[in-house]
Picture 1 (cartoon, rainbow, N blue to C red):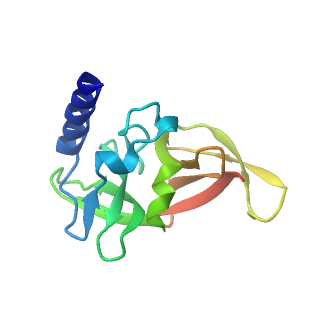
Picture 2: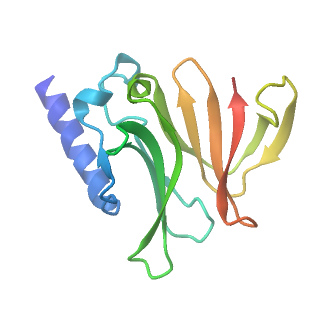
Length: 162
């Protein structure tokens, strides 16, 4: 167990080292906050995600963090800017702190998705992701996808499961 925790800590620190420094309003989740059985005893699993979200061929990222002022879980994305050194931070959604017990994120590659235009309806539509996107899911629950809308220059959210 100690070896697994040490490997996890090194892996988490490596991921954080690749990502830009968090804005001061946020903090990383502690290992104790994300140690849940459904994560297969790997607390970092489903907390960090990365890909090219806006199609500019630069590494972008997303992570679940804590907003210090509200003590809420926040899905925070960053887009690497053209200078390669600066980042645009975007807060996508937030949840009560206890939600970390069941929510996670992962990158999904371009693909066709079936989604609900209206989360209160049973009717699904089809959509093709042109760039990497962020899948936000709940263990045995809802799932939505945040994708970059090039026309709006903003992330949009679609519901893929209820």
